[in-house]
Image (cartoon, each protein chain N blue to C red):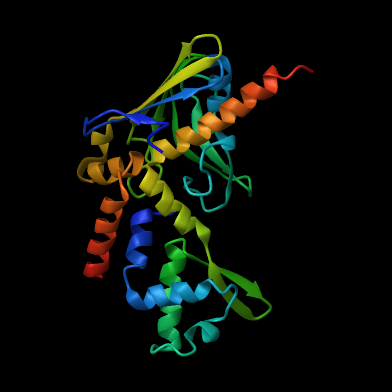
Length: 164
Length: 108
């Protein structure tokens, strides 16, 4: 997968990603902010008890960022810190290492949409302030960033299997 | 949220791996799963409970029977953990944005 997303090294408190999209910035912005449910892995990355059917960003500074379950319940994920369509979005991600909403956590996700020629956009994403996870920073960074390769997965698995 | 580390932990136990493997056959009761295993039925129930928490097993109620099957969410969580969350999310975003752009380019 690393042929399509590019990660740069290695600030322990941040994860950076870049991806090129064949769509103008306005479309990329709209899909990112208004149609999150079409691409966010809701089956796995959600925190409510109910099955999540939508992920919503309220389009203004201070707006909520939350999931909606199939029973109508909602669970907050964070909030909007900067709202500059169609070029820059900053979200607060307030889900702690136990996957609970914690309004005081405040890690930050900055997304930039940069026009490349007529019809394409470079999307740069930084998930920073991972220091807010304290002692669990490295564990969380591994979840957000790529674990790298199968060798390391297998090594981790072997270590856990041996410890069980 | 299915925690991939919990999924790995759940599969770290050999008996539990065996129980998990038996889920591949589709909906089965605890008794059916326990048949021929060297552990008691309550122990199998306990293993199923751990697998359920780890997103590896689901229960369907059919009348009075509780039937267990593989839950793919745990597997999906492992895959995300491997790829890294933002890699996975951004690749899916790219697909969605390009579909939308193609739809808009189409003459009406």
